[in-house]
Structure formats: C-alpha cells, structure tokens
Length: 219
Image (cartoon, rainbow, N blue to C red; front, side):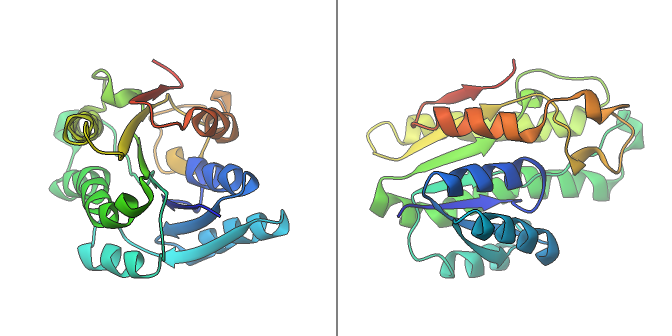
C-alpha cells in the first residue's frame, strides 16, 4: 500500500483529496491544526473501508513539521494543500496578515517539502503543490495572496529543474475558487455556493497525478 501525506486535510479540497486517494488504495496521513476536523475526515475514510492516520501539524512551525515526519514510516506522495487567504486593498493588510499568508502558503510548503524529500527519495515519489489560478496572474484585492502563490509556483518550477535527473517529480496544481470553508471568514466572494465543489477538483487531480509538471483545473 502506498502512502500519501496531505496537509490541510480536515476540510475543503484537502478532505476531498484524502477521500479519493483512500478510495484508490492509498493510506492517507491527514495533517492539520484542528484535530476535530481531521478526525471527521479519518472517520469518513475508515467507514468507506480505507486507512488514514491523523497528525496534528502546523506548517508554520518547523518543529511541528519535524514531529509530523517522524510519524510517517514511508511516503510516496506529498500534497502541500494547507493554505490561508486574506483579501482586500493593499492598505488594509496588517503585518500579521502578511506574515500568516507567507508563513503558511510559502514557508510551510517549502519546509514540508524539504523535510519530506528524504522519504520521497526512497520511493521515487511525487510532490503536488496546490497553487490556484492566483499563481498564474494578479487579481484585484488579492495582492499578498497572489504574491504567496506566485512564490509557490516559482518554487515548484525550480524543483522541475533541480530534479531533472532525479526520479522525484513536482506538480503545480492550478484551480479557481471552490465552494469550501476557505471563504467562511471573508466577503471577497459573495456567493461561494455558485463555485464548483472540491470533490470534482479532487477527482481530476487524482486522475492526472502522474508526475506531470502542471495540472490545470482552471486557467
């Protein structure tokens, strides 16, 4: 049985990805900050006959990522899905907003990948970085969010070059907004219910997870 580690696996796209990988024979390591959400996802997977383990991990804390790595015996796929969003005019951002965005979306992705690579090397594994279309072009009232996603795009494209002669692969995943709890604390999207559900996106990601450089759900 192959293992997949999904960060931010308690809700939204992370939860949907966890369920579809589990349905297709993967043991899923569910990580995130909120035990209750992760346990709900774990219960859904086990009720469907799959295998999942919960790991409490805050990707903004290097020590937390190191502890998470210790709980995973082997790893074939890492999905860097954990992310946060703050939206508004540039003048509206506090320093804490900026730090949270960059520490979670950028530093968290980089450190998690860095610490997972030794395990992935032994299985000739794959990294998928969930970026969104905010990594393809600038958007109104999303300046810092887009900056964080452009950074992850640059990180992923650099891994393509760094791993050219290696069996390791990195995939950049681009999608538009989804109807998930991501929008629950902002009015940036007026009616999230009109957006596609994360289950449809997760299905396409799984279907195209073959080590390619990019997966485009939306452009």
